[in-house]
Length: 249
Image (cartoon, rainbow, N blue to C red; front, side, top):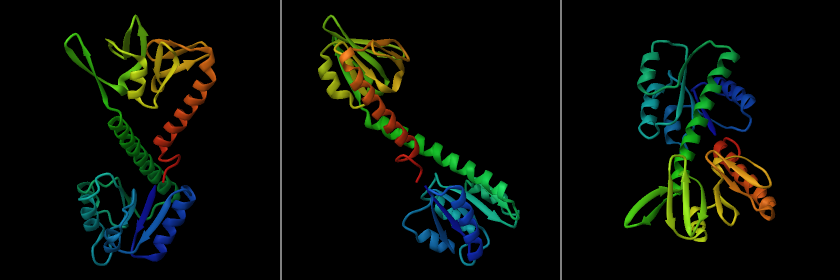
């Protein structure tokens, strides 16, 4: 997570930078002394504290230019003047801090900005992961049925048929579990020769049974320890996706 401070006064930049680093020591904090310098930067910040009154391109003009290429940037205007507050809405400003303000106000506004950034990252990661998971096209009795892999809660084999269980339907077709395993990816685990479960839908488990958000699957006792290790790796991977490589950056 990168937080930038753009202000023409060095003392102000240093003051805000110190406050940010105290609150979020893991954040990458950068400083810009003008709108032109900020716009020329190769990497644009995730959160921006932006002064309005600056020589050359002022803060409002800078924000307008930034919005043309970045819709997700969290922009916080910082100014002693209230007259630009309505213009701030036109460029999608997250907040308008009016000087003077105390440390508590600064911390609250920044915390909300960080929360919005985190939510945005989670949504992006979720969309990316959905794109990474393709769909299955099942051919059955002359008809073709499309099932999104992410929607499969678990699969089971019964009487030479594979049954795909989603949250709202079941799809049966003649096939082999081994072939299905090759298509679904690392979010799935085969705890028993007759079952394949999606880690995303697990509610709880023990040495004999996996309880899912819909239905349950058998656990072969000899697979239990490997299942636990695999599920732990999956949960660690999920934490990385949620927080951005294990933490915000």
